[in-house]
Amino acid sequence: MPAVEARNLRKIYRVYRKEAGVLGAIKGLIHRRYDETAAVDGVSFSVEPGEFVGFLGPNGAGKTTTLKMLSGLVQPSGGEAGVLGFVPWERRNAMKRQFSLLMGQKNALWWDLPARESLELNRAIYGIERADFDRTVGDLTAMLDVRDKLGVMVRELSLGERMKFELIAALLHHPKVLFLDEPTIGLDVISQKKVREFLRAYNERSRITILLTSHYMQDIAELCERVILIDHGRLFFDGPLESVLDRFATTKLLEVEFAAPVSADFTPLGRVLEREPSRVRIEVPRHCVADVCRELLACGPVTDFSVQEIPIEEIIRQVFSAEQGRHAARKNAEISGA
Image (tube, rainbow, N blue to C red; front, side, top):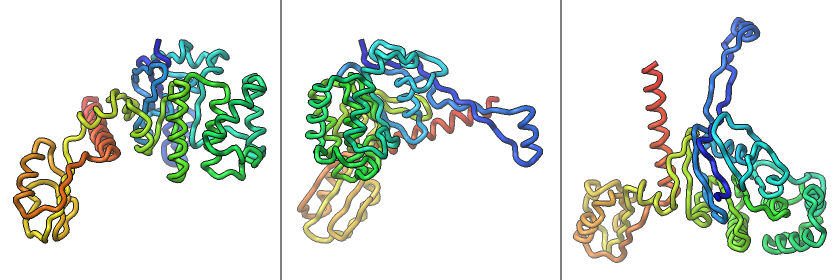
């Protein structure tokens, strides 16, 4: 049985459309007009126990809404979902004790209490045995290197330290499923790296199922073998991260350094990204790489030559840009048909 499953999951929001002016406001008191917005529009996927899956999309794509429905915080407008065999929006206690939702932009700890006392409150809420609690807090604070911060007020912790304690609070009751919504947002590169290392080690050790959203592609590249891409509430890719390159990366980067300055015109070979007297960096179609390499080598003595893949974050950006263009075309077609 999948740990997490969504089947044609939908969430439609009704948004009040206010007309301009005083007359419009008066009309709104008598007869309100609403527009419907599909935050999630028929999304289906499943996540097996122990998987670490990246859930990607631009702002407003429906990622957070999907996680909220899977967590039982939001009632869907249609479709079905299951988390560990439970229907999330029924909010059964048995399910609540087996999953956690951590949102990087929301505080779950008590601002005016020391971190230790915030964790103690969670222990009381979940009914965790004292010995288990002490052992878990000791292990997790050691892994995240914040043991010496337990007595510090939450409001006095740095952003990175707060996020580490948020993670500890989310994992105190040993959940089987963890939903992470932007856990590294706003963190410095050192804190991001520490959180990534912790999540990788914890997933390998406990085989917890993790669904991760992040705008930092390094999070996804280092942690997730599989990615789900969503935009405008619709899923349009689900598969291995490497397949994103195979399916959507249509170009490669060639970088050549010559022994002496060359005056050749490289523009017919591809899109010139950087040009110096003895160095050039070009983006070329994948099927033209061999031919372009031969032409570059014929331009003069070469001291260095590299063929690189387009950075994964750039590919994802291009994918979403193309999908947004298709979405706009669909909307225009619907308007024209109406």
